[in-house]
Image (cartoon, rainbow, N blue to C red; front, side, top):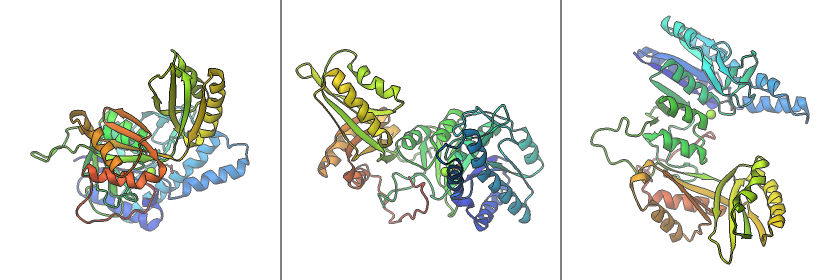
Length: 425
Ligand code: ASP
Ligand code: MG
């Protein structure tokens, strides 16, 4: 017998009918002989509704973080009670717990609390007594007894942390797509569901813009080596298994694919300083004030020096663009730079795959395919398992489709994907 943690997101518990579907899934796993722990999110739209209420109440004063977390946590509390009621009505003994009741102990960083410890003992007793255990996602409690929340999408992290604490055999994330795709099917209709992907690749995809799983949940799963599976609440299917490299590869199977997926991010903007004196410490002088202003920098490119002068380009989140530009203009005067300009109309396209480690030619195939479409590359950055390029935003679809085709990621079965929620890719 094995232990499975099943997490259901907001759209999977959006109404009683859907909660019945959740109950049926949990009961089927129970009947197959598994111990089952369910982690649930707030009903679809509820966290947003509560956030709006809080802002209405605080009226520009900014709701106090402690009270805001208490308020937001109620969304998940409602769901666990409803799920448990439905399970009992359908004949399955069950018991539910809030984060505080199972002692999901966190630090006191309200709205982005980190889990420090979980006391899984009470859950084990319930499982031993044959019950399905239902735990509220997203919430915890700090050492002073204040309710905390883990950040948007935090129920994924709750599920993985519980799975780690309980030594679960698998953590299943049920959502509104049937797995992790090679890219967002809304942009590339021929995107293919992956049977498996490594923690490392998933982490890169999540941090590069894929929204299927919360980044922290993937990090946690990788660290504790909890096998994660993403699957649909609404359709039968194997989903996508996220696991260690080399794990569970069927004997004699095809070679590992070179590229696992393509991510894109439209949230970045580019800033450039032209004609800066190329002297030691220049990068620190340009980026120091940006860091001091708490603006996160992603890609950085410095050109080779020409006549003792160089050009410097970097990207930041679009929401920080205006502030960053102001700082840069100020710095340009101090440094005697020739010109400063920026561009918000960009997109970052990234290829991710552990196969890159052992194969040459990924970058050149990427650049060739973009060139064939007449797409100009503005910036390039690479890491061990990733290549990112910045191109004009209007090329998002054309570029992603070209790369998808070039790296042989297209689904040839003729199946198309319908996407309801916001979690595709
Ligand atoms: N209810 C929270 C949110 O909407 C947490 C979650 O769903 O994972 O972000
Ligand atoms: Mg989610």
